[in-house]
Length: 162
Image 1 (cartoon, one colour):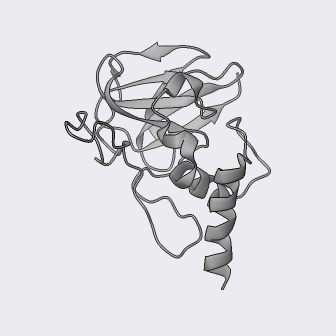
Image 2 (image 1 turned 45 degrees about the vertical axis):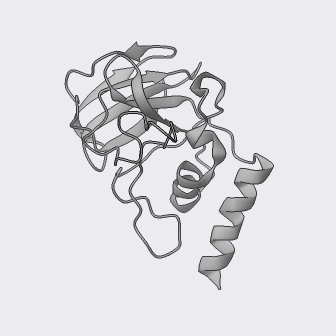
């Protein structure tokens, strides 16, 4: 019953718009995982209008499919929203008749560029799961058209206070 209630809470949060994209220390890691997986803001095609402020793209130069991320992710391949499973974070599916490059692919070790549109926090993409070095940091409103240190070798993400 707990698993079902947790999943319903995530779905309700997405529908009601609960959960801002600012790094929220008061929410649990299960809540954050569920929001990154299930909220509509995660796959909003107009990424600039998304309330999730970290954006990763499959291709360099902010091209191809993307994913909007609102909360830190310990392991792109194993988000645990409290349903007993480990779910990979994937690039969103765009372009029904001609899918954009990267549509539906796992993000882990596939992101070639990113942008941080958060006004207060820096975004850090890590080479290894568990926020382990090396990493690349983007300041507020900074984009990286081609990751250097973590180019197609990225496994976790965290918001960092300046």
